[in-house]
Length: 456
Image 1 (cartoon, rainbow, N blue to C red):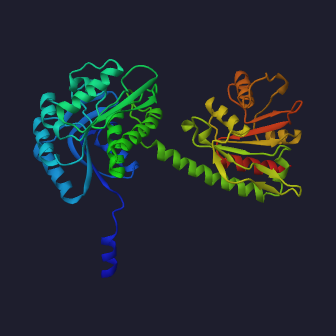
Image 2 (tube, rainbow, N blue to C red; image 1 turned 120 degrees about the vertical axis):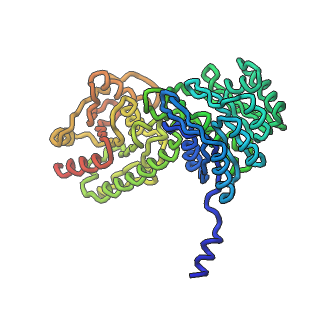
Image 3 (cartoon, one colour; image 1 turned 45 degrees about the vertical axis):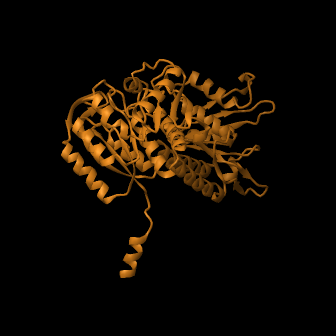
């Protein structure tokens, strides 16, 4: 018993620890509770010292209940006494007394400051900006303002790219901050840059701007991601690049909740990885069904077959969100069906392209298979309740490689309000007749094909 306990106590720490000093956003968009989620996603155990509780939603801040400086001090002391905090991200901090607490307790920490001077709705989040500059900024190791905040802190009106560099250097020199990052998300145009200046010079990262409504929390997420990546790598430049990469997807997949400016989706990458794992498992289950059903060979055309399976349709953006079998589904000479593992994402097969086209038309579809054309198979689909549509391939215009599946779906969507589950053509010169069958999920795909095969 004693030796077991000794072993447990001497095991290496599974997660490093990061701290956030910030306000609590009741709408869970840009407060310390969001910082904790970013830490968790990036493999850091986050701890939280609360500076204020806001009555907040996507429509803005209605009220602020500020935590006393004494209680803020007690929180930070309690956390530092127990945890080996490797870096601290600081967001909203409201009063001069709170500034002094942070200066006293965290001046030796690797402090990453997100200078949230104002909320999205314009509500001031720092009571006295001048005291903030004098007390907080000189102890920051990193500061990450957006263009508006950088203008306020530097006194330079940032309007063009060259102004960013001037403001970046001035903030660094004025407040003796080792690393200044100015984010370009508030700039105009389709392409933006984030800048970092330090003793090594100026480093910038370019990225495509995403036209998105839901951007609440972007700055906070970036600063927390930077803190997390610094804890893991101890490399400021690498942390800058990784944080910039991290924040792009949460903006693209904004949550679209609330009636105002909604929060970004900080969990999107692990959500998509989880969904892809489920897709792979379901593809394996389909492979077992196909290889063990003695009639499945009937469905395989001369050009062989494949199954496309996507993650949830609302998260699909391109072929990288759709899986197929790399080696297709083949029928041997002895009528044995062999599924060509492994499952791969991003393979530009006809089935994947057609499924993507169907999803982008707004259909709740995640599975599609190409099947050998036969009048009896089409009639059997009708008997089990599926609507069918025939496409005349003679009407297909000449176009580049890979456009056929898109043309078929465009043609159908111009004629039907809802795209039928069974799409078939009788072929034309050089093109084998084919049935394409899509379903909303794998359960439906397997059940439908099982019922179909029982009728053949």
